[in-house]
Image (tube, rainbow, N blue to C red; front, side, top):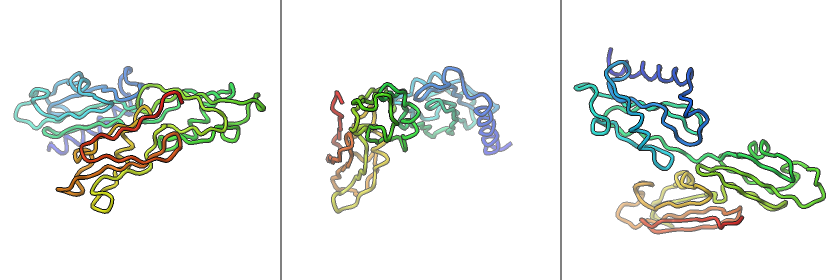
Length: 265
């Protein structure tokens, strides 16, 4: 059997295993990235080693990047090109990924908005808020029009919501008729390059993925964004909203751009 055919067969078996068994109990329903199983060797049926612990130890900031090589994992099958296969759960969803020897296996955790609980005027509106969340964002004016009337129809009401955006649980309390924005920092547009008129690239998606715990910290550099203007000092420009209010911020290449939501809101 050729190497390509063996790999195809292995991927099919891995996929079927994910469908049938859904990963280990420790990963089921867990938030973030959980390594269920990792193997390195002459997969699927040759000599191999269990490297689950090694890959688990490489998880950092909700993701993992690890090269498939003998230095990392030893050599369980001398003279044969080896494969690293990792089965994992990401926010409770089971998946599998492979990399051949010499390649780097990358699993990136994109922050996901999850509404854990919500109460408006003493009424549970968790399901309503979850349904209103789109593209990992939630924007609404707190009131009966969006959340439904409550027994306290003539009294001033508040919305209290507990949620996560790729991090620890956060709690917000918003008064009726005020705007709820989750995450509090939302990226509208981001560009990197010889700004304002030179060569540049749109990095909105990349910057948006760096928002965590209602704040943003990102270093402007070619490693993250590539280089759209070689030999020229570049700028990162970010247009965003904070609690629904538009704002803009920029930093020079190699500087760190930070947006922090004020506490107590």
